[in-house]
Amino acid sequence: MSSVSPFRSPAQKAEERTAKRDAVLRAAVRMFNERGFHATSLDDVAASLGISKRTIYHYLANKDQVLLECVTLGLEQLIEAATAARQEAGDGRYRLIRFLHRYARITMDDFGRCIIRTGEEILSPESRPRFRALKREIDMALRGLIEEAVADGSIAPVDSRMAAFALAGALNWPARWHDPKGSLSPETIAVMLVDILTKGLDPRA
Image (cartoon, rainbow, N blue to C red):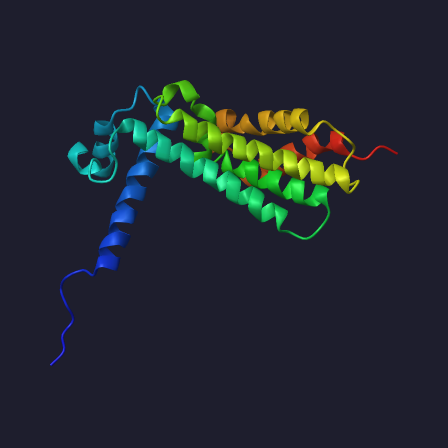
């Protein structure tokens, strides 16, 4: 006679652990964004989830690791967005704009917002190299998309480094002023901003 085991399988345990870890990170990133890293304690994060701080240590070593994981999640979303944009059909301008739309939306979400609101000096010296490496990867991906668009003539010739700084700088700001409860959705803001910014990239007659 077969029966269903009352014990969770290793896969179920791993899935549950991942879900709990993700819940800790989501609660933490929202507090970091609202209060700031230094004004947020792991006790605050634990209380918001109805658990003890000790429980958090089952999933993450300390507050610095929590912050590093939060910004890493946001940075990885941007890297994935750049990869997806480069695989799309269309000319270089189209692929660049697709990435910029996604970039703007991500920086208005919890983990993307945390990237913009976190200066690298807040991270521990051990965490800073990874933060810098991921940010550089995104910068190089953006420069690459700009260069491809210049090469196929779909945008005007520009210095890719300066153009990347200008575009990213402008698209980072909604992370500070966008109100999730406001009348404009992240999608609407992204389209409006990118439209304004890319007018200057139009090919010259």
